[in-house]
Image (cartoon, rainbow, N blue to C red):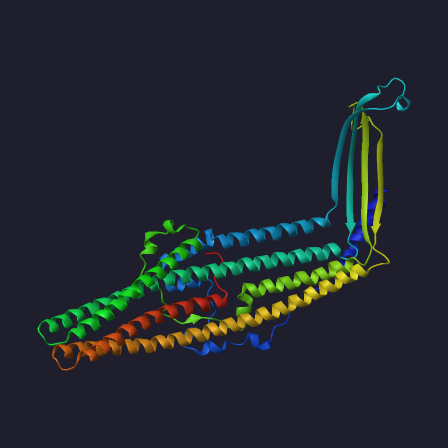
Length: 468
């Protein structure tokens, strides 16, 4: 009997290669998706392969340390990793269905039986111990177990992609917060320099008024402009503090625990080389959201097979062996031995409308997953092209503002010198100073916008999720 059972198990296992439902095939992407980016023609980027550790291109050790802290202690990453571990645990659980299930039971009890049920010479009150071992094995004739494992594997792959996407976002947000803090510090410095310049002009105007060479209105006007520029500083300080507090949260710290070296940082990181961006094919291979969408499609495709397998009989081979001991004697040999072997067949037939409805629902989920994958691919390309365009135009804007700032500063110097000599009126000087202040502020904002555009481009490229 044992040999026949083993032969039956082996023969049934050989049939498990026939799995219900469609096999997963990687979805095709548009042919043009693998082409070079439209924005790659800009001299600010290069078609060399993108760098996973892109923040190191800034050559800023302080920033490197902050990114490492974020990858270790960020709470969003910890949540994503926990969800990945949960998905992997479910995959292990699905794989366990390939193995026989065993249940060992023991039931001691103390009781009294009737006189009619008691053998001569035996006590009516006694201990009874029941021991048993049950073994069951599902014969996966139609691939239910196989497809369930494939679905769990797809879910685990999607969770891994999601975790990588969170890492990308956290690294980008960390760099962005650091850039925001340092850029705000530079904007504060520019605003303070403008106030100092206006203070100098105010002293000149006050001196001219004191000797009767200018009108009191000139002093009032320059004072008003100075106070307007000074009023900008508190809001810039608030922006810097907010960026520092955000940076503390991203790196798993309280605001009080942020190192003093970070709070004192005032130099905005900038690149002195073109950004390597690769091409569309490399982008789709790197983007974790694309990989996650593909794995979800694989999982939903496998679930079609799980639902389809329910149309067919489910066969479980089982066996049990047990014994009953009375009086607490020899449990393993003193009581009567009982055993049984046999298959269990379950089949929802002939009414299978519920199963067919579940198949239709699974196919609809598969169609939605495919559409989600296609949309993710298109959004990845859109985000990258948009980031490339934004970066190129931000650089052009900054270059123009640098020229404008230099010209405005030159005009202000000339106007101030001519005012001392009495060659021009004060309104001309005031207009020149106002123009210089606006040009300095615009340039500081442009520097910040360029740094943000760099971070957004790196984020769109999908880098920054490997070990740091």
